[in-house]
Image (cartoon, rainbow, N blue to C red):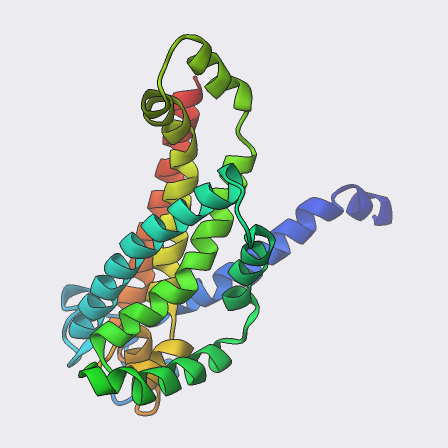
Length: 267
């Protein structure tokens, strides 16, 4: 028995980790069918499972409005952070400039700083600085804050992809009289593109899921994580479970689709 467990220790550990990770997802899915009366925190033993929350996911006041706000913020922050982070990654890997070593360190500062510290610092900047030019806490302050901490993750992801490229491919293109522009768009960019897409997906998930920094700089604007937190005080509506689980399924489908597409390209 001990030998059997020892031979399969890695597999057992992996299964336990997966169970631990997917347990909240299973809880979210199960409680989306809860036929509750006042609060969706605990299961209603008197009512049978219902599909009414799936039929009307926008039934709870404000849930879809907050979802749309989170998606809008996530898309804007992702696009800007991906463009800025990709350019910065190329600069740090392909060019030598004064302060390059310091830049490598500074990139990790937002990642290493606790979110509550970042949120409090950004709140001070927005209130004492940008309020003088008419920028109030709300949609755009959330976007600015999300761009700030998403850029670092994009830089690290794209930079890792760039450093793993074989320079001989670009050298071969140049030997065949390809110019810098042709080499970049036909060789370098297609090879880096999976890293850029992965960085963009990571940035969007971080932006969509963020609560701590958003709570500091959002003012009266409500994102989906903030809606869930506020709703917890009076009982999270099952519609939030429906939307949360649906977002998980969409993300999982994108990951699986990306893997299948990547495997198909390799063949």
